[in-house]
Image 1 (cartoon, rainbow, N blue to C red):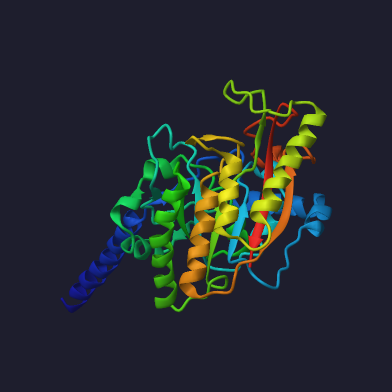
Image 2 (image 1 turned 90 degrees about the vertical axis):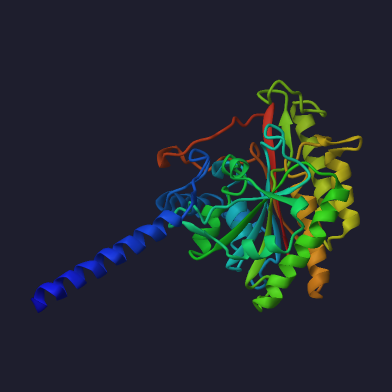
Length: 363
């Protein structure tokens, strides 16, 4: 009888443990990859892409201006196909040493979903990662608690169709298997609205950093994503986005325009004045929802930098210093070969259809 009772108790404990494990699994809400063509999403794919970047783009990596001794506190990174952006991903993201990363993403579908003038969080507990699922940091809920209700929304529908944030995750996890994230999408909003939201957001982030005794750069970092100009007159939804023309001379003028934006707005010590210049370069003065120069991060960059500047003030931190890591386009180098990795290209790359990529890190 005693043996029977012991057996029943043992089985009950096992079943209870199984149920608890199953219950925990059921509570996990995983955000799956949207783009499994342009982005490596399996561990062996990431390993192969990194191996090819290191082998085929050694000169570009060597020329990338990223001192590995001091980690970025803030960084600006592209989010196009891995085959096109190539070396810029590891050159920039390899110098993010923090475990927790707040990512300011683009909201490409904001117009379709009628979202504007609020930052957008998600409610996922994990995001798909190539080596294992990536944990969403518990900082998200702490940060949200410190925000006025009117300045944000939680919108999984917008988050799950957005590709900008997920583009960088394979490389972030390549360098740190335990990386955690908080995803914040930045849709249409004028600069005045950005400043109004960035103030309480930076204050809330600062409180979390202080309460948890975190170090900006070592424990937590801000990552902003954007592709630079989307240029040409072919396959851009019927739009002509080539003010300088689509011949080689027009290409050179467009790239020169790109460097003017980077040099004047993103390099060196950031300031709200420079942020204003960036907005003037990229957003129509009379309609903040329309492009002037087609950087898709025309909201994520200014909002992310304003938040960083406010956070710098909240923490009494030393001034940020922007370091240009590199610029390239989808047609100025050979793409990384990826077809044998069950990957591909999501867009063409010609003089009539190309994209620019800029990387900047802030210490």
